[in-house]
Each structure stands twice: as structure tokens, then as C-alpha cells.
Image 1 (cartoon, rainbow over the protein chains, first blue to last red):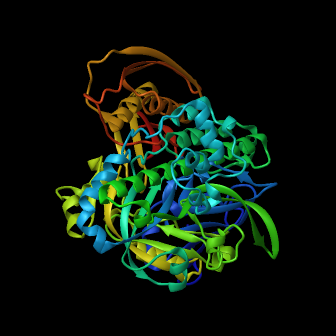
Image 2: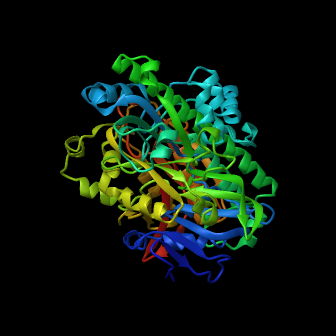
Image 3: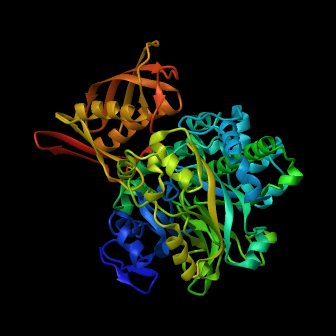
Length: 477
Length: 138
């Protein structure tokens, strides 16, 4: 794989063979060493083979080997000639993150941290096969699919103000419940309000450092403040949508002509009926994920009230923002001096729109969109803000996390004979978990150094640092 | 003969599956999938079902086969106790499977596998037998 270093933070993969555009990877030298060890650079090149790709096949500094697209991959497609790819969104459609701020300080919460995390672990269904707080009928699932967060808020799970602080208002245009298979709907009946397992988590943190006082003030962040970070997605319903449409696309006549290097890149023309149906189903699954995170957040608010004996006015648990990091969205971007309507795929990448962009909620428009970048459970997570460089280079995108560096197998080997719970406890992080092997797989060393990853997007001008959060307590699936 | 080995994939879980013939690769795949998903045995009722799949080739059939078995567990709450491959061509699989309901008193959930992907699937002759590669999204 040819790789040209352009500057301290940019690496180009020149267009060769069937690549229609070059690749561009954001990383520093140390991160590139890790990236170069797996197959993710080849995956950046593979994505560049897709019809109608515009600009470059992009990858963020948290990138690693995925399936089809790399994790951390971004690609934009012309709406007439381009494709939509379920593998470019991922199985966990609208996997994403939301961050709540509180009026509490770490000094106030620290003495109660154990009962608090236990209440959260008890109240929020967590782990492999977890079933939800809500049992829905098929017609109710369809409402969730078409109305997203607003439907569950209407059922009493949260406040209307939460919707204004959710990407797309928690409901994407173009979602159609009818586009989903019976299997997908059935898998959604009892999973609203469940965290699931794998890398999904809920974390109580504290604001350790503020880098940008103005943006922090607009976001309602202050040093020592307690925060709640929630990471999960569309659960089995989303997985089924991806599975169903990959199979359909693999069998379409148009796919054979695309001559793609990996079957997992199976795609359909955006303008085709299959492409349109997938978009409608994906948007519906995205709405399901927003509803899921909304219900989990509501359960977390209730747990805080019970465990701390404080009312909502004292806690002031406000949703700062909710971002999707596995999604495809129609957006307008400037390409070669002209505004073009594109379909932007973000597979393990976060939208990072700058100040003044009309899609940034009015409350944040003076500074830019909050970008939430969870790290690992031992070190840190970040709040950044979208910057102009993202519009110029990455279709308004940046990284979505730290990114894995160890395989799950390697992490488990490294965890052997150690008590991760005790280690994290000594570092000031209380952990509750449902699966021992998941905990080992998700150990801090399994991830890249999030400080380094965030520094790359900061220096490259994609998203600027606002605050660094330190974990205090975590529940893992 | 070894039945499988894990591939060191960064984020997900890759497997090489082995068999003396293609049928055995499919049967081993079913058994290994359930070893990853669940541990323990129950004395609950068993039911038998037939499964017939049409694919583009063996790779596609393998992804579909494992995907169906994953769906049975994840969505129907059943655990596979036996799988017999009755007929296998390049484009069609017919099998009989035995299932029992997941019972939390006897079964323990292990890894959550989201999906069986098509990424870098392969199905090839390998020494005296056969080997397939498949990546799970976990």
C-alpha cells in the first residue's frame, strides 16, 4: 500500500488500480504506526472503488480494521451517480453518543458514587440479550421508527427540550417503518431502553480541563462538573436492517457491474428503488437508536434522583447533545467551488459542523456543533466543537472515539491474572459490568490514546478541543 | 483435525473454520458459533426444524447459514443443540437443526455477535480438507 505523508497530520493513498479517488488519512506518526499494522488502509483504498465517490476516501485518526469500510471512515457520494452502502453505515445503525451535563460537582457526587452507579446498573438493562424497560406493540415500534425520540418523549421519557439538542432533532426525514422486514420489527419490540454489550456503556464523568472558555460556557460546561455519557445504538433491529439489505444488494444486477474488491461493500445506486428503500429503512433504524438513547437517558435521570435524593431542579440534568457516528446523511457541501448535494457516509465518524452552519442547533450556532469523543473507561473523553477545516476537507466530519488498538483476543490475554475492577478502582473509576470477558476486551489498553487522537483532529482544524472529561464510574454491558 | 481458529481482527471476531469436506465446515461453523454465543446445557424440550437456503456460492451460503442460526438465538431466543447438513451444493443448503429454548437457569450468554459479515469471506480447499474464513461483527 503506497502512502505519502503530506504533513504532520495527513497521509495520502494515491489512486491506483480501480480506485476512483485518492485516500486521505488523518493521523500523526505514532498513530500511523498502529494503523499500518492492520488492514484498515486497504479498506480506505477499497472504499475509493465505489461508484460516484466525491473528493477522497477519508479516514480519521481513530481508524482501525472494520468490515467493508474501515471504522473511522468517511465517504461522500454524488446523489445521481453515487451509491448508498449498508456496510458504510454499519450493522449498528446510528450507534452514537449523548452527553448530559448536571448542576453537580464531583465533590458532591464522590461520596455517593457507589450507590449511584449501582442504581444505574440496576435500572438500565445492560449486557448481552438485555431486554427493555419498554415493551412495544408492532404499531408502536413503527411510531418509534418514524418519529424517533419525539415519540418516546411524548410517552413521558424526557423533555421536549431534549429534542433540540439531538442531531436531526432525534428523527430523520425520509424514515419509513414499512421499509423494514418483519424480522427487523420483531427484534425491536423489547429493546428500546437497553444498553446492550460490546463497547457500549454509560459513564459518569467530571470535567477536568476546559480548553475553550467561550464554547464551554455556551455548552454549559464548567470545571469539576459531573457529566453522564451514554454510548449505544439501534440494537438487534438495526443489525437486521443491515443484514436484510446487504443480502438484497448482493443479488442486484447493478452490483455485478460495480466490480468491488469486497462483498461487504455491496451497494445500490442512491437513485435506485433499492437504494431509496435502504435509506428509508436506515433512517427508521436511526430513529429507533435515538429513541433508545432518549429512554436510557430518562432512566439515568430517575436513577440520579432516587440515589441522591434530589429533584430535577437541583440536578439540572440537561442533554448537551446527541451525535450519530454510524450513519449516511444527505448534506450540502462545497466541492470545487460549487455547492453539491451529497450522501455522506460516516462509519465510526462524527459530524462536526462549524459555527454558523444552519444544521447546528440555534443554542450552539455561535460556536459550532458539540462533538462528543469518548475515550476509554480508564483515561478520558472529550467534548470538542466542529471547525471550518471539517467543511473544507472531511465533509464536516471528525473522529468518533479513541479507536481500538488491541484485538479482543489480545486484550483478553493482557487482562489474564489481573483484576481490572481493582485497577480501575485505584484510578478512581467505579465499574459495574455484566460480562467479564467484555470488561477485559474493553480494558483501557485496548484503545489508542484518546489525547493523541483528539490532538490530531484539533491540529488539523476539523474539531477544536473544548473540554476533557475524566471517568468516575462506568457501567458496561 | 482442528475445527476452527480465531483470527486476530482489531475490532471484530474472525474465524477460520475447518472440515474434511464442505459439509463438515458448515456443521463446525454452527457448533463454533454457539460455543461463542452461549455456554451450558439445559434439559428443556427439543424441537427439530428444517432449513433450506439458496446462495450465490459457498461463501454466501456460509454467511447466510450462520446468519440464520444467529437470528434463531438473538431474535427467537432458541439455542442450537444439533445441526445436520443433509445436502450442500455450490448454491443450495438443506439442513436439519435441533433447538431448545434459552433457559437462564442453565444457559449463560457469552459474546454478543451482532452479525455475520461478508467481509473477506473465503471457502477453499486446504491441505486434505477445506477451510472457510468468516468475520463476525461483535
